[in-house]
Image (tube, rainbow over all chains, first blue to last red; front, side, top):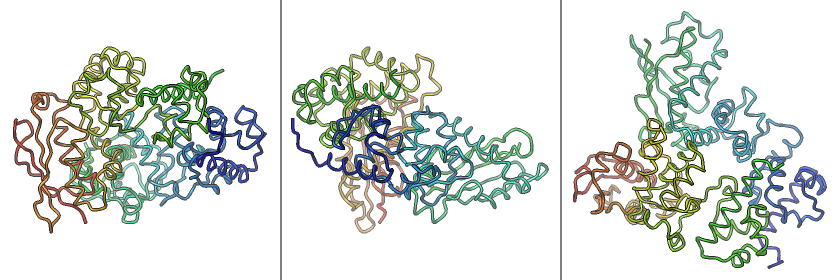
Length: 278
Length: 286
Protein backbone atom coordinates (compact mmCIF):
# COMPACT_ATOMS: atom_id res chain seq x y z
CA UNK A 1 0.00 0.00 0.00
CA UNK A 2 1.39 3.36 -1.02
CA UNK A 3 1.57 5.68 1.98
CA UNK A 4 2.64 8.68 -0.04
CA UNK A 5 0.05 11.44 -0.25
CA UNK A 6 -1.16 11.55 -3.84
CA UNK A 7 -1.97 14.67 -5.80
CA UNK A 8 -5.73 14.23 -5.37
CA UNK A 9 -5.30 13.73 -1.64
CA UNK A 10 -3.23 16.87 -1.36
CA UNK A 11 -5.99 18.82 -3.11
CA UNK A 12 -8.63 17.38 -0.77
CA UNK A 13 -6.56 18.21 2.29
CA UNK A 14 -5.99 21.73 1.05
CA UNK A 15 -9.72 22.14 0.46
CA UNK A 16 -10.43 20.72 3.89
CA UNK A 17 -8.08 23.23 5.50
CA UNK A 18 -9.61 26.10 3.54
CA UNK A 19 -13.11 25.02 4.61
CA UNK A 20 -11.99 24.87 8.23
CA UNK A 21 -10.53 28.36 7.98
CA UNK A 22 -13.59 29.71 6.21
CA UNK A 23 -16.12 28.21 8.59
CA UNK A 24 -14.09 28.34 11.79
CA UNK A 25 -14.79 24.65 12.45
CA UNK A 26 -12.19 22.64 14.36
CA UNK A 27 -11.38 18.97 13.86
CA UNK A 28 -13.36 18.13 16.96
CA UNK A 29 -16.39 20.05 15.61
CA UNK A 30 -16.12 18.16 12.34
CA UNK A 31 -15.67 14.86 14.21
CA UNK A 32 -18.91 15.63 15.97
CA UNK A 33 -20.70 16.43 12.70
CA UNK A 34 -19.36 13.31 10.97
CA UNK A 35 -19.97 11.02 13.90
CA UNK A 36 -16.38 9.73 13.61
CA UNK A 37 -13.46 10.78 15.77
CA UNK A 38 -10.32 12.08 14.09
CA UNK A 39 -7.57 14.39 15.30
CA UNK A 40 -5.17 15.17 12.46
CA UNK A 41 -6.20 16.67 9.12
CA UNK A 42 -4.84 13.76 7.09
CA UNK A 43 -7.14 11.40 9.00
CA UNK A 44 -10.03 13.14 7.28
CA UNK A 45 -9.08 11.20 4.15
CA UNK A 46 -9.62 7.93 6.00
CA UNK A 47 -13.22 8.73 6.89
CA UNK A 48 -15.75 6.76 4.90
CA UNK A 49 -18.17 8.49 2.57
CA UNK A 50 -21.04 8.04 5.02
CA UNK A 51 -19.22 10.28 7.50
CA UNK A 52 -17.98 12.62 4.78
CA UNK A 53 -21.50 13.05 3.48
CA UNK A 54 -22.73 14.24 6.87
CA UNK A 55 -20.02 16.89 6.82
CA UNK A 56 -20.81 17.89 3.23
CA UNK A 57 -24.48 18.16 4.05
CA UNK A 58 -23.59 20.43 6.95
CA UNK A 59 -21.56 22.76 4.75
CA UNK A 60 -23.99 22.33 1.81
CA UNK A 61 -21.35 21.35 -0.75
CA UNK A 62 -21.40 18.63 -3.39
CA UNK A 63 -18.90 15.76 -3.08
CA UNK A 64 -17.42 16.29 -6.56
CA UNK A 65 -17.10 20.04 -5.99
CA UNK A 66 -15.35 19.35 -2.69
CA UNK A 67 -12.87 16.90 -4.21
CA UNK A 68 -12.12 19.28 -7.07
CA UNK A 69 -12.20 22.39 -4.88
CA UNK A 70 -14.70 24.01 -7.21
CA UNK A 71 -17.23 25.68 -4.97
CA UNK A 72 -17.73 29.20 -3.67
CA UNK A 73 -16.10 29.89 -0.31
CA UNK A 74 -17.81 33.27 0.05
CA UNK A 75 -21.20 31.62 -0.20
CA UNK A 76 -20.10 28.92 2.19
CA UNK A 77 -19.02 31.51 4.77
CA UNK A 78 -22.27 33.44 4.37
CA UNK A 79 -24.44 30.34 4.63
CA UNK A 80 -22.59 29.22 7.74
CA UNK A 81 -23.39 32.58 9.29
CA UNK A 82 -27.05 31.92 8.64
CA UNK A 83 -27.47 33.82 5.38
CA UNK A 84 -29.59 31.15 3.74
CA UNK A 85 -30.41 33.33 0.74
CA UNK A 86 -26.78 33.63 -0.31
CA UNK A 87 -26.04 32.35 -3.81
CA UNK A 88 -22.77 31.54 -5.59
CA UNK A 89 -22.08 33.58 -8.73
CA UNK A 90 -22.75 30.68 -11.10
CA UNK A 91 -26.15 29.98 -9.53
CA UNK A 92 -27.08 33.64 -9.77
CA UNK A 93 -26.76 34.04 -13.52
CA UNK A 94 -29.31 36.55 -14.68
CA UNK A 95 -31.58 35.80 -11.70
CA UNK A 96 -34.29 35.08 -14.21
CA UNK A 97 -36.23 32.22 -12.68
CA UNK A 98 -38.37 31.96 -9.63
CA UNK A 99 -36.89 29.67 -7.03
CA UNK A 100 -40.39 28.68 -5.96
CA UNK A 101 -40.98 27.18 -9.42
CA UNK A 102 -37.89 25.06 -8.90
CA UNK A 103 -39.21 24.03 -5.53
CA UNK A 104 -42.49 22.98 -7.12
CA UNK A 105 -40.66 20.96 -9.74
CA UNK A 106 -38.53 19.29 -7.08
CA UNK A 107 -41.55 18.46 -4.96
CA UNK A 108 -41.91 15.31 -7.07
CA UNK A 109 -38.78 13.93 -5.45
CA UNK A 110 -37.72 12.66 -2.08
CA UNK A 111 -36.12 15.04 0.36
CA UNK A 112 -32.81 13.27 -0.18
CA UNK A 113 -32.83 14.07 -3.90
CA UNK A 114 -33.82 17.64 -3.15
CA UNK A 115 -30.85 18.03 -0.81
CA UNK A 116 -28.47 16.68 -3.47
CA UNK A 117 -29.90 19.04 -6.02
CA UNK A 118 -29.41 22.03 -3.71
CA UNK A 119 -25.88 20.96 -2.85
CA UNK A 120 -24.98 20.79 -6.55
CA UNK A 121 -25.76 24.47 -6.93
CA UNK A 122 -24.78 25.41 -3.37
CA UNK A 123 -28.32 26.60 -2.68
CA UNK A 124 -29.88 26.53 0.72
CA UNK A 125 -33.25 24.76 0.78
CA UNK A 126 -34.78 27.82 2.48
CA UNK A 127 -34.06 29.84 -0.63
CA UNK A 128 -36.29 27.56 -2.67
CA UNK A 129 -39.06 27.57 -0.13
CA UNK A 130 -39.33 31.33 0.32
CA UNK A 131 -41.41 33.22 -2.22
CA UNK A 132 -39.96 35.96 -4.38
CA UNK A 133 -36.39 34.66 -4.66
CA UNK A 134 -34.76 34.34 -8.05
CA UNK A 135 -31.99 32.14 -9.37
CA UNK A 136 -30.31 31.42 -12.68
CA UNK A 137 -32.46 29.86 -15.39
CA UNK A 138 -29.86 27.11 -15.61
CA UNK A 139 -31.02 25.78 -12.25
CA UNK A 140 -34.61 25.76 -13.44
CA UNK A 141 -33.42 23.86 -16.53
CA UNK A 142 -31.62 21.31 -14.35
CA UNK A 143 -34.72 20.85 -12.18
CA UNK A 144 -36.89 20.34 -15.25
CA UNK A 145 -34.43 17.84 -16.63
CA UNK A 146 -34.73 15.88 -13.44
CA UNK A 147 -38.52 15.97 -13.67
CA UNK A 148 -38.36 14.84 -17.26
CA UNK A 149 -36.08 11.99 -16.37
CA UNK A 150 -38.50 10.50 -13.91
CA UNK A 151 -41.93 11.82 -14.84
CA UNK A 152 -42.36 11.59 -18.53
CA UNK A 153 -46.07 12.18 -18.54
CA UNK A 154 -46.42 15.74 -19.92
CA UNK A 155 -49.75 16.08 -18.16
CA UNK A 156 -47.93 16.26 -14.81
CA UNK A 157 -45.67 19.04 -16.08
CA UNK A 158 -48.69 20.85 -17.44
CA UNK A 159 -50.28 20.56 -14.01
CA UNK A 160 -47.19 22.03 -12.34
CA UNK A 161 -47.52 25.10 -14.55
CA UNK A 162 -51.22 25.33 -13.86
CA UNK A 163 -50.72 25.24 -10.11
CA UNK A 164 -47.93 27.84 -10.35
CA UNK A 165 -50.27 30.19 -12.19
CA UNK A 166 -53.08 29.76 -9.70
CA UNK A 167 -50.59 30.45 -6.93
CA UNK A 168 -49.29 33.61 -8.58
CA UNK A 169 -52.69 35.02 -9.45
CA UNK A 170 -52.60 36.98 -6.20
CA UNK A 171 -49.74 39.02 -7.58
CA UNK A 172 -51.97 40.23 -10.39
CA UNK A 173 -54.50 41.69 -7.97
CA UNK A 174 -55.42 45.17 -9.10
CA UNK A 175 -54.15 44.43 -12.59
CA UNK A 176 -56.79 41.97 -13.69
CA UNK A 177 -60.39 41.61 -12.69
CA UNK A 178 -62.86 38.80 -12.93
CA UNK A 179 -64.93 40.45 -15.62
CA UNK A 180 -61.96 41.30 -17.85
CA UNK A 181 -62.10 39.72 -21.29
CA UNK A 182 -59.42 37.06 -21.82
CA UNK A 183 -57.52 38.92 -24.56
CA UNK A 184 -57.04 41.94 -22.28
CA UNK A 185 -56.16 39.74 -19.33
CA UNK A 186 -53.48 37.90 -21.32
CA UNK A 187 -52.20 41.22 -22.65
CA UNK A 188 -51.87 42.39 -19.07
CA UNK A 189 -50.02 39.21 -18.24
CA UNK A 190 -47.61 39.91 -21.10
CA UNK A 191 -47.00 43.43 -19.88
CA UNK A 192 -46.14 42.16 -16.41
CA UNK A 193 -44.38 38.90 -17.09
CA UNK A 194 -41.48 40.11 -14.97
CA UNK A 195 -43.59 38.96 -12.05
CA UNK A 196 -43.15 35.42 -13.25
CA UNK A 197 -40.15 35.07 -15.47
CA UNK A 198 -37.23 37.28 -16.41
CA UNK A 199 -35.81 35.00 -19.08
CA UNK A 200 -38.58 35.24 -21.63
CA UNK A 201 -40.68 37.88 -23.26
CA UNK A 202 -44.30 37.09 -23.99
CA UNK A 203 -46.88 38.54 -26.31
CA UNK A 204 -50.29 37.82 -27.68
CA UNK A 205 -49.83 37.58 -31.42
CA UNK A 206 -53.39 36.87 -32.44
CA UNK A 207 -56.68 37.26 -30.69
CA UNK A 208 -59.65 35.44 -32.18
CA UNK A 209 -63.19 34.82 -31.10
CA UNK A 210 -62.50 31.30 -29.90
CA UNK A 211 -58.83 31.36 -29.15
CA UNK A 212 -55.75 33.41 -28.42
CA UNK A 213 -52.33 32.70 -29.90
CA UNK A 214 -49.63 33.39 -27.39
CA UNK A 215 -45.89 33.48 -28.02
CA UNK A 216 -42.96 33.09 -25.65
CA UNK A 217 -39.51 34.11 -26.81
CA UNK A 218 -36.21 34.12 -24.90
CA UNK A 219 -34.87 37.63 -24.30
CA UNK A 220 -31.67 38.50 -26.13
CA UNK A 221 -29.72 38.85 -22.90
CA UNK A 222 -30.78 35.45 -21.63
CA UNK A 223 -30.34 33.76 -24.96
CA UNK A 224 -26.65 34.43 -24.62
CA UNK A 225 -26.52 33.25 -21.04
CA UNK A 226 -28.59 30.13 -21.29
CA UNK A 227 -28.61 27.13 -23.52
CA UNK A 228 -31.07 27.43 -26.32
CA UNK A 229 -32.11 23.91 -25.43
CA UNK A 230 -33.74 25.08 -22.23
CA UNK A 231 -36.34 27.01 -24.17
CA UNK A 232 -36.93 24.19 -26.60
CA UNK A 233 -37.37 21.78 -23.79
CA UNK A 234 -40.65 19.95 -23.65
CA UNK A 235 -40.79 20.32 -19.88
CA UNK A 236 -40.36 24.06 -20.16
CA UNK A 237 -43.04 24.33 -22.84
CA UNK A 238 -45.48 22.14 -20.96
CA UNK A 239 -44.91 24.28 -17.92
CA UNK A 240 -45.69 27.48 -19.82
CA UNK A 241 -48.76 25.88 -21.44
CA UNK A 242 -49.95 24.83 -18.00
CA UNK A 243 -49.26 28.31 -16.69
CA UNK A 244 -51.36 29.91 -19.41
CA UNK A 245 -54.11 27.45 -18.68
CA UNK A 246 -54.00 28.12 -14.94
CA UNK A 247 -53.92 31.86 -15.51
CA UNK A 248 -57.40 31.70 -17.02
CA UNK A 249 -58.83 30.85 -13.59
CA UNK A 250 -58.75 34.58 -12.78
CA UNK A 251 -62.35 34.51 -14.04
CA UNK A 252 -63.23 32.24 -11.18
CA UNK A 253 -63.91 29.20 -13.37
CA UNK A 254 -61.79 26.20 -14.23
CA UNK A 255 -58.60 26.29 -16.29
CA UNK A 256 -58.86 26.62 -20.08
CA UNK A 257 -57.41 24.21 -22.57
CA UNK A 258 -54.00 25.28 -23.95
CA UNK A 259 -52.06 23.55 -26.72
CA UNK A 260 -48.57 24.19 -27.96
CA UNK A 261 -48.78 24.82 -31.68
CA UNK A 262 -45.12 25.36 -32.48
CA UNK A 263 -41.75 25.16 -30.79
CA UNK A 264 -39.20 22.45 -30.23
CA UNK A 265 -35.61 22.17 -31.25
CA UNK A 266 -35.86 23.95 -34.54
CA UNK A 267 -37.83 26.94 -33.32
CA UNK A 268 -34.85 28.71 -31.80
CA UNK A 269 -36.61 28.76 -28.46
CA UNK A 270 -39.76 30.50 -29.72
CA UNK A 271 -42.86 28.67 -28.54
CA UNK A 272 -46.42 29.39 -29.60
CA UNK A 273 -49.50 28.32 -27.73
CA UNK A 274 -53.17 28.39 -28.51
CA UNK A 275 -55.49 29.18 -25.63
CA UNK A 276 -58.99 27.87 -26.31
CA UNK A 277 -61.51 30.21 -24.81
CA UNK A 278 -64.44 27.80 -24.74
CA UNK B 1 -29.92 2.92 13.21
CA UNK B 2 -28.75 2.75 9.60
CA UNK B 3 -30.11 5.68 7.57
CA UNK B 4 -31.35 5.36 3.99
CA UNK B 5 -28.40 7.31 2.69
CA UNK B 6 -25.90 5.25 4.64
CA UNK B 7 -27.39 2.16 3.06
CA UNK B 8 -27.26 3.76 -0.39
CA UNK B 9 -23.61 4.70 -0.03
CA UNK B 10 -22.67 1.23 1.19
CA UNK B 11 -24.70 -0.54 -1.50
CA UNK B 12 -23.32 1.66 -4.27
CA UNK B 13 -19.77 1.18 -2.99
CA UNK B 14 -20.36 -2.56 -3.14
CA UNK B 15 -21.78 -2.44 -6.67
CA UNK B 16 -19.04 -0.16 -7.90
CA UNK B 17 -16.30 -2.36 -6.49
CA UNK B 18 -17.84 -5.54 -7.91
CA UNK B 19 -18.49 -3.94 -11.29
CA UNK B 20 -15.00 -2.51 -11.71
CA UNK B 21 -13.41 -5.77 -10.63
CA UNK B 22 -15.47 -7.82 -13.05
CA UNK B 23 -15.37 -5.49 -16.01
CA UNK B 24 -11.62 -5.17 -15.78
CA UNK B 25 -10.86 -8.71 -14.72
CA UNK B 26 -9.21 -7.60 -11.49
CA UNK B 27 -8.71 -9.66 -8.36
CA UNK B 28 -9.52 -8.25 -4.93
CA UNK B 29 -5.80 -7.79 -4.41
CA UNK B 30 -5.32 -6.02 -7.73
CA UNK B 31 -8.29 -3.74 -7.19
CA UNK B 32 -7.09 -2.91 -3.66
CA UNK B 33 -3.69 -1.99 -5.03
CA UNK B 34 -5.22 0.18 -7.73
CA UNK B 35 -7.00 2.35 -5.20
CA UNK B 36 -4.26 2.32 -2.59
CA UNK B 37 -6.02 0.24 0.04
CA UNK B 38 -5.95 -3.29 1.46
CA UNK B 39 -7.69 -6.47 0.34
CA UNK B 40 -9.50 -6.67 3.68
CA UNK B 41 -11.03 -3.23 3.08
CA UNK B 42 -12.24 -4.31 -0.36
CA UNK B 43 -13.65 -7.47 1.16
CA UNK B 44 -15.68 -5.40 3.63
CA UNK B 45 -16.91 -3.09 0.89
CA UNK B 46 -18.00 -6.06 -1.24
CA UNK B 47 -19.94 -7.46 1.69
CA UNK B 48 -21.73 -4.13 2.12
CA UNK B 49 -20.04 -3.59 5.49
CA UNK B 50 -18.73 -0.13 4.69
CA UNK B 51 -18.48 2.55 2.02
CA UNK B 52 -15.29 3.73 0.32
CA UNK B 53 -13.21 6.24 2.24
CA UNK B 54 -12.67 9.70 0.84
CA UNK B 55 -9.13 8.75 -0.20
CA UNK B 56 -10.15 5.51 -1.89
CA UNK B 57 -13.00 7.14 -3.73
CA UNK B 58 -10.98 10.12 -4.98
CA UNK B 59 -8.31 7.77 -6.36
CA UNK B 60 -10.91 5.43 -7.83
CA UNK B 61 -12.74 8.25 -9.63
CA UNK B 62 -9.49 9.60 -11.02
CA UNK B 63 -8.09 6.25 -12.09
CA UNK B 64 -11.22 4.79 -13.68
CA UNK B 65 -12.65 8.10 -15.02
CA UNK B 66 -15.74 7.83 -12.88
CA UNK B 67 -18.15 10.62 -12.15
CA UNK B 68 -18.15 11.68 -8.49
CA UNK B 69 -21.93 11.40 -8.35
CA UNK B 70 -21.83 7.65 -9.01
CA UNK B 71 -21.75 6.83 -5.31
CA UNK B 72 -25.06 8.64 -4.85
CA UNK B 73 -26.81 7.76 -8.07
CA UNK B 74 -25.68 4.13 -8.33
CA UNK B 75 -25.31 4.76 -12.01
CA UNK B 76 -22.08 4.60 -13.96
CA UNK B 77 -21.78 6.32 -17.33
CA UNK B 78 -18.71 4.89 -18.94
CA UNK B 79 -18.27 3.89 -22.55
CA UNK B 80 -16.17 0.77 -22.40
CA UNK B 81 -14.81 -1.04 -25.39
CA UNK B 82 -13.97 -4.38 -23.82
CA UNK B 83 -16.56 -4.95 -21.15
CA UNK B 84 -18.05 -7.78 -23.23
CA UNK B 85 -15.02 -9.88 -22.38
CA UNK B 86 -16.09 -9.81 -18.77
CA UNK B 87 -19.83 -9.95 -19.29
CA UNK B 88 -20.32 -13.05 -21.32
CA UNK B 89 -23.77 -13.50 -19.84
CA UNK B 90 -25.07 -10.66 -21.94
CA UNK B 91 -23.81 -11.92 -25.27
CA UNK B 92 -27.29 -12.87 -26.47
CA UNK B 93 -28.45 -9.33 -25.97
CA UNK B 94 -25.47 -7.66 -27.52
CA UNK B 95 -25.69 -9.04 -30.99
CA UNK B 96 -26.34 -6.09 -33.29
CA UNK B 97 -26.12 -3.92 -30.24
CA UNK B 98 -28.51 -1.07 -30.15
CA UNK B 99 -27.37 1.80 -28.06
CA UNK B 100 -28.34 5.13 -29.48
CA UNK B 101 -27.01 7.50 -26.92
CA UNK B 102 -28.54 6.25 -23.75
CA UNK B 103 -32.07 5.44 -24.80
CA UNK B 104 -31.81 2.05 -23.16
CA UNK B 105 -30.60 3.73 -19.99
CA UNK B 106 -33.57 6.04 -19.94
CA UNK B 107 -35.92 3.12 -20.35
CA UNK B 108 -34.17 1.19 -17.63
CA UNK B 109 -34.41 4.18 -15.29
CA UNK B 110 -38.05 4.55 -16.17
CA UNK B 111 -38.67 0.87 -15.55
CA UNK B 112 -36.99 1.09 -12.15
CA UNK B 113 -38.89 4.24 -11.34
CA UNK B 114 -42.21 2.53 -12.04
CA UNK B 115 -41.55 -0.98 -10.82
CA UNK B 116 -38.55 -0.79 -8.53
CA UNK B 117 -35.07 -2.19 -8.59
CA UNK B 118 -36.08 -5.66 -7.39
CA UNK B 119 -38.45 -6.06 -10.32
CA UNK B 120 -35.72 -4.94 -12.70
CA UNK B 121 -33.25 -7.41 -11.21
CA UNK B 122 -35.86 -10.14 -11.59
CA UNK B 123 -36.44 -9.09 -15.19
CA UNK B 124 -32.69 -9.23 -15.89
CA UNK B 125 -32.40 -12.69 -14.38
CA UNK B 126 -35.36 -13.85 -16.51
CA UNK B 127 -33.46 -12.64 -19.55
CA UNK B 128 -30.27 -14.31 -18.37
CA UNK B 129 -28.43 -11.04 -17.79
CA UNK B 130 -26.50 -10.23 -14.66
CA UNK B 131 -28.15 -7.04 -13.30
CA UNK B 132 -24.69 -5.79 -12.36
CA UNK B 133 -24.07 -5.33 -16.07
CA UNK B 134 -26.46 -2.38 -16.01
CA UNK B 135 -24.63 -0.66 -13.21
CA UNK B 136 -22.87 0.96 -16.13
CA UNK B 137 -25.75 2.57 -17.95
CA UNK B 138 -23.69 2.93 -21.13
CA UNK B 139 -23.33 -0.81 -21.63
CA UNK B 140 -25.05 -1.69 -24.87
CA UNK B 141 -27.89 -4.12 -25.43
CA UNK B 142 -29.80 -4.83 -28.57
CA UNK B 143 -33.23 -3.80 -29.67
CA UNK B 144 -34.80 -7.12 -28.68
CA UNK B 145 -33.86 -6.45 -25.08
CA UNK B 146 -35.43 -3.03 -25.28
CA UNK B 147 -38.58 -4.56 -26.69
CA UNK B 148 -38.70 -7.12 -23.93
CA UNK B 149 -38.33 -4.37 -21.37
CA UNK B 150 -41.29 -2.54 -22.87
CA UNK B 151 -43.32 -5.72 -23.03
CA UNK B 152 -42.75 -6.27 -19.32
CA UNK B 153 -43.94 -2.73 -18.61
CA UNK B 154 -47.03 -3.40 -20.71
CA UNK B 155 -47.66 -6.66 -18.92
CA UNK B 156 -47.56 -4.77 -15.64
CA UNK B 157 -50.22 -2.38 -16.90
CA UNK B 158 -48.09 0.60 -17.86
CA UNK B 159 -49.11 0.65 -21.52
CA UNK B 160 -50.26 4.25 -21.68
CA UNK B 161 -47.40 5.67 -19.73
CA UNK B 162 -44.65 4.11 -21.85
CA UNK B 163 -42.93 7.02 -23.54
CA UNK B 164 -42.14 6.74 -27.22
CA UNK B 165 -38.49 6.28 -28.00
CA UNK B 166 -38.50 9.53 -29.94
CA UNK B 167 -39.51 11.32 -26.74
CA UNK B 168 -36.37 10.04 -25.15
CA UNK B 169 -34.21 10.88 -28.13
CA UNK B 170 -33.93 14.54 -27.32
CA UNK B 171 -32.81 13.85 -23.77
CA UNK B 172 -30.44 11.20 -24.90
CA UNK B 173 -28.64 13.55 -27.25
CA UNK B 174 -28.85 16.47 -24.88
CA UNK B 175 -27.13 14.45 -22.20
CA UNK B 176 -24.39 13.16 -24.43
CA UNK B 177 -23.97 16.31 -26.49
CA UNK B 178 -20.58 17.21 -25.10
CA UNK B 179 -19.46 13.59 -25.37
CA UNK B 180 -20.48 13.53 -29.04
CA UNK B 181 -18.63 16.75 -29.72
CA UNK B 182 -15.56 15.49 -27.91
CA UNK B 183 -15.60 12.23 -29.83
CA UNK B 184 -15.95 14.03 -33.11
CA UNK B 185 -12.98 15.98 -32.09
CA UNK B 186 -12.87 19.49 -33.29
CA UNK B 187 -14.24 22.96 -33.35
CA UNK B 188 -14.68 22.58 -37.06
CA UNK B 189 -18.33 21.64 -37.35
CA UNK B 190 -17.99 20.82 -41.02
CA UNK B 191 -15.37 18.14 -40.30
CA UNK B 192 -17.54 16.90 -37.44
CA UNK B 193 -20.43 16.37 -39.79
CA UNK B 194 -18.26 14.28 -42.04
CA UNK B 195 -17.26 12.15 -39.07
CA UNK B 196 -20.83 11.34 -38.01
CA UNK B 197 -20.94 7.95 -39.79
CA UNK B 198 -17.77 6.86 -38.04
CA UNK B 199 -19.12 8.01 -34.70
CA UNK B 200 -22.48 6.33 -35.11
CA UNK B 201 -21.04 3.06 -36.34
CA UNK B 202 -19.22 2.70 -33.04
CA UNK B 203 -22.45 2.75 -31.08
CA UNK B 204 -25.14 1.53 -33.34
CA UNK B 205 -24.86 -1.46 -35.59
CA UNK B 206 -28.36 -1.50 -37.00
CA UNK B 207 -27.66 0.95 -39.82
CA UNK B 208 -25.02 1.97 -42.29
CA UNK B 209 -24.22 5.64 -42.49
CA UNK B 210 -22.40 7.75 -45.03
CA UNK B 211 -21.84 11.43 -45.67
CA UNK B 212 -21.17 13.25 -48.89
CA UNK B 213 -20.05 16.83 -49.40
CA UNK B 214 -22.65 18.74 -51.36
CA UNK B 215 -21.16 22.18 -51.29
CA UNK B 216 -17.91 22.82 -49.54
CA UNK B 217 -18.25 26.59 -49.71
CA UNK B 218 -21.70 26.43 -48.23
CA UNK B 219 -20.61 23.78 -45.68
CA UNK B 220 -23.42 21.48 -46.73
CA UNK B 221 -23.24 17.72 -46.43
CA UNK B 222 -25.69 14.94 -47.06
CA UNK B 223 -26.05 12.32 -44.38
CA UNK B 224 -27.55 9.04 -45.50
CA UNK B 225 -28.47 5.95 -43.59
CA UNK B 226 -29.78 2.54 -44.46
CA UNK B 227 -30.91 -0.41 -42.32
CA UNK B 228 -28.57 -3.37 -42.32
CA UNK B 229 -29.63 -6.78 -43.56
CA UNK B 230 -30.35 -8.24 -40.13
CA UNK B 231 -32.92 -5.58 -39.32
CA UNK B 232 -36.51 -6.66 -39.17
CA UNK B 233 -38.09 -3.76 -41.01
CA UNK B 234 -41.49 -4.73 -39.67
CA UNK B 235 -40.23 -3.74 -36.26
CA UNK B 236 -39.62 -0.21 -37.48
CA UNK B 237 -42.75 -0.03 -39.51
CA UNK B 238 -45.27 -1.67 -37.22
CA UNK B 239 -44.02 -1.20 -33.69
CA UNK B 240 -45.63 1.95 -32.40
CA UNK B 241 -42.93 2.41 -29.83
CA UNK B 242 -39.86 1.87 -31.93
CA UNK B 243 -41.03 3.08 -35.31
CA UNK B 244 -39.75 6.40 -36.48
CA UNK B 245 -37.18 6.76 -33.78
CA UNK B 246 -34.07 6.17 -35.84
CA UNK B 247 -35.34 8.52 -38.47
CA UNK B 248 -36.04 11.22 -35.93
CA UNK B 249 -32.80 10.69 -34.12
CA UNK B 250 -30.57 10.98 -37.12
CA UNK B 251 -32.62 13.53 -38.97
CA UNK B 252 -32.90 16.13 -36.27
CA UNK B 253 -30.85 15.37 -33.27
CA UNK B 254 -27.48 14.15 -34.37
CA UNK B 255 -26.72 17.16 -36.59
CA UNK B 256 -27.82 19.47 -33.81
CA UNK B 257 -25.58 17.71 -31.35
CA UNK B 258 -22.71 18.50 -33.71
CA UNK B 259 -23.66 22.14 -33.76
CA UNK B 260 -25.18 22.12 -37.22
CA UNK B 261 -28.51 23.24 -38.50
CA UNK B 262 -30.71 20.99 -40.55
CA UNK B 263 -30.92 22.80 -43.79
CA UNK B 264 -33.09 20.58 -45.85
CA UNK B 265 -35.24 17.86 -44.45
CA UNK B 266 -36.49 16.41 -47.69
CA UNK B 267 -36.19 12.66 -47.76
CA UNK B 268 -35.20 10.81 -50.83
CA UNK B 269 -36.40 7.49 -49.47
CA UNK B 270 -38.22 6.26 -46.45
CA UNK B 271 -36.43 4.14 -43.94
CA UNK B 272 -38.70 1.14 -44.06
CA UNK B 273 -37.74 0.20 -47.60
CA UNK B 274 -35.06 -2.43 -47.75
CA UNK B 275 -31.82 -1.59 -49.46
CA UNK B 276 -32.56 2.10 -49.86
CA UNK B 277 -30.85 5.07 -48.34
CA UNK B 278 -32.57 7.81 -46.39
CA UNK B 279 -30.82 11.08 -47.05
CA UNK B 280 -30.92 14.41 -45.32
CA UNK B 281 -29.03 17.57 -46.11
CA UNK B 282 -27.30 19.35 -43.28
CA UNK B 283 -25.69 22.74 -43.20
CA UNK B 284 -23.05 23.62 -40.67
CA UNK B 285 -23.41 26.79 -38.66
CA UNK B 286 -20.30 28.90 -38.89
